[in-house]
Structure formats: C-alpha cells, structure tokens
Length: 249
Image (cartoon, rainbow, N blue to C red; front, side):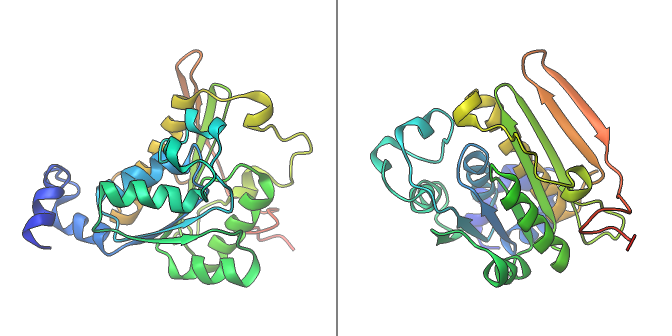
C-alpha cells in the first residue's frame, strides 16, 4: 500500500476491525455488480470509495430521465448511454485507482459462470426473479459470496449468501419459484432513498464479507419498512427441498 492509498483510506483503516490488513484485502478484491440502477448505484459508489481493487459492472440497459430520481451513479448528461459506461465515469472520477470493467449486455450460462468464478463476491442489484435465480445458482456452484437486495415503494430487503460456508442457505431457499405477479418499480413506484438505503447496506455487507469482520446477514433476511421506520430481521434456514442447494433428491 503506497502513501496516497494510506491517506485516501485513512479513516477506514482507523476502524479497528479493518486496519491495514483489511484495507489490503479490499484492494486485492474483485467484485461483480450486476445491475447499475437504484441498488447498484450506491453500492458501486461506496465500494469504489472503499478501495475495492476491481469492479466489474454488468447492465444492458440505457439511462433514461426517469432513472435519475434514484440511480445516483448517473448524470443527466449521460441520458441515452449504457448504464455501465455512465456509472464507470462517475466511479472513476471518485476513485481512479480502482479498475472498472464494463459489460453492456446480459450474461447467461457459461459467460455468467466464468465471471462469477473469477470474482471474490457478487452484488445482485437486478430487478427480476429470473436474473436473481440464475445469479444465485452460479454463485452457489462456485462458492462465491452473494449479496442480494430488493426494494419497491417504501420497502426493502437484504440478504447475504456466503457459499464459502456449507450451512449457508441460498436465494432459492427464500423463493422456490418465480412469483407470477412480481412487482416492478415502473408500475408501483419507489422512493429513491429507500432503494439507496438497501444499496448502501449491500456495500456494507460486501466489505464485512470480504474482510470477514463482524456478523454478516448470512442466514437472515433483513426487511426495511420506511413508512414506519421499522426493521425486521428474520431467520432464513437452509431448505432441504431447495432446488439449488437442497439435500433431498
């Protein structure tokens, strides 16, 4: 770690649980962020600021005006641009020491597996069950920790699946099948700071998971209700009948 890095990350290094060793772990880490919208934007900004060595950004969508109310990694001048390129510009302005790889198309099958296998951790910031299921299965296959978040209206949820631990449940333990009436922000709305809160917490859990400090949310589902400012932490157990990680044939 050079002098500039010691100065840039000084306040984080001062945290006893992080220190120089933990900061070096972050500098040596590679995180994949899938989705650069309301969740992925704050997660990416804080992870870049924290000194993650490499961030791979995955999103096939283009920025439009309606995104700017909550997708804070983007700027008005970038409307019409692919979100990974727009986000990378903001992230590079924040921390040019981090390496940014942009993948401006959807990843499936072998392409997704190859990227997940090469990563130290994956942030699932997507907005549909099909993508979440496929990301979960790939992370489970390669024992890559997964931080999953979701938000709509004034509600959000967060979970951590650390597949380095054999007792970790997976996302399919929570949702066995695609919900037929899955809600979307375009139809039901979203308050920007709500999705931002969940995205920030994804970054916190990513830092904790990579440095192995504190108690992660593995085995729990954290639910946030902004209307009542109520937080609930529910136990999530490994399901023997889970189609991905279950032990029942």
